[in-house]
Structure formats: C-alpha cells, structure tokens
Amino acid sequence: MQSSTQINATKARMDKEVLALRAKSIFFKTLKYLSLIVASIVFLLPIVTIFLASFKEYNEFYSSNKLALPQSFFNLDNFKTAFIQGGMMRGFFNTAFIMVISLTGTILLGAMVAYVLHRFDFKLKKAILLVYMVPMFLPMVTTQVATFQIMSKLGLYNSLWAPIVLYLGADVMSIFIMMQFMDSIPYSNDEAAMLEGASYFYIFRKLIVPLLKPAIATIIIIRGVGIYNDFYTPFLYAPGDNMGTLATSLYKFMGPYGGQWNVICAGVILIMIPTLIVFLSLQKYIYNGFTAGAVK
Image (cartoon, rainbow, N blue to C red; front, side):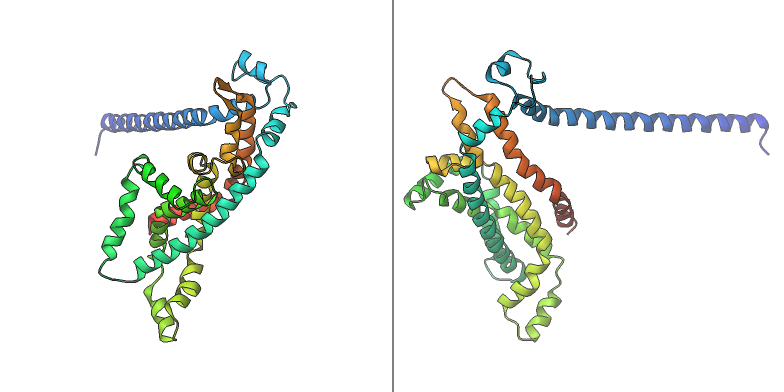
C-alpha cells in the first residue's frame, strides 16, 4: 500500500496538472474570443463608417471625425439624391434584367454541361475538363484586351448583353459545384429510367435537375450577389447613360477632384439592403450547399 505521503504527493501532482489544463483552456478560449472580437471590429468598422457618413451633410462629412455621430439621423437628403440623381431605379431594372438572364442561362448551361461530363465517358472528356479548368488559373486582366475586342466585333459593346454574355461564359465554378452534387445521385436511377424507355433528356429534366436544387440555390445566391455587386464589367462594357447598374450608378457622384462621399455612402447603404435581406433569409442554403459540396 502507498503511504499517506505518496498519496498526498500524487494528489498534489494531479491537482497541478488539472490547474495547468484549466489555465491552458482559459488561455485558448480568451485568445479565441479576442480574435473574434478583433475580426468583428475590422469587418464592421467600414460598414459603421459608411452608415454614419450617409446621414452627414457635405461640410459635416469633411469637418467631423469619420466615426462621429451625425447631427441628425433624420437627414435623408443624401438618400434622395443618390436614388434620384444617381438613377438607381433605372440601375435596379438593368441589374435585375442582367441577373435574371445570366442566372437562368448559368443554371441551364451549367446543369447540362455538368450532366454530360459527369454521366458520360468519351475520349475528349479529360481534355474538356482541362479546358474548363485552365481559365480558373488565368488572371482576368490578361484576357481583357482580347475579350473587349471580341465583344466589340460581335456588336455587343455598350449594351446590356455584353455583361450577360461574359457572366454566362465565365461561370466555370457552377459546373464543378453541380458535378460534386451529382456524385450523390446513384447511377441506378438513370438505369432504371432507361429500362422504362426514358430518354437522356427526360432523365436530366425529371431525375437530375430536381435533385440539384441545393446546388442551384447555392449558385443563385453566390453568383447573384457577385453579379449584383460587380462594378468593373458593366462599367467597361456598358458605359451608356441608360445602361448603368446599381453598382455603376454611384460613379456619377465622382468628379475629377473628388467625390460626394456622403451621397455615395448613402447609395451604398441603399444597395446593401436588398443583398442583406436576401442573405439573412437564405443563409442556410449557402451553408448547407457548401457543406454538402465539401462532403461529397
């Protein structure tokens, strides 16, 4: 039997180990929460600054601290100016037109290409997959001169169809997302349908597409937000006065020697509201879609 001295020594050693583990756990928990707090501040600081600036007058914006509260939160003149003079209503319709056609085409083309590449084996399959993967590794700026010339030769420059065509052709990621989801759809479903006399198109329309709803929802949300917020493409390829989108409408308040940043901030808030509502309403589809795609 152990003596009382040995028992006490063992107990003291165990108590020290427990205290050390508790101290280590507290340290890492504190570090975790501090990192989350710092990340939240870094993320929210620009949004808070924009929100406060949207209620300030021009002179107030430049004379006061950027984080100072505005004189009145009931000053909505900046929002009126951004909405009316910025042509945000026209920008909203143009953005909606581009998004509806681009997303519809992306889903249809992406689903059909993914179905062919995933369900069929043919000689050039690997080569086609490689062709789709190569543009993902090329910097976009390296192809802009050629892309601009192609759009101009096709007569699409300065029209809403130019960004639509570019959005349709540049969305390679949607194909791979759908192919990942198709891994969970057993081939036995296709074989059973073919035994019943179903065509490939019928199988695609009735069996594959309904099971791709999580992938389609994920693509609509992620791709839709990307198109909604894109400034570069419509600004470069559709510069006409009546071709502006929500993202490009705020550029009207930029001048050669500066800009009306208080009005621009108000416009940014107006543009953020729809995407914020959509994201908060459908965020579960985003998380579920990415999680399911990663697992598959």
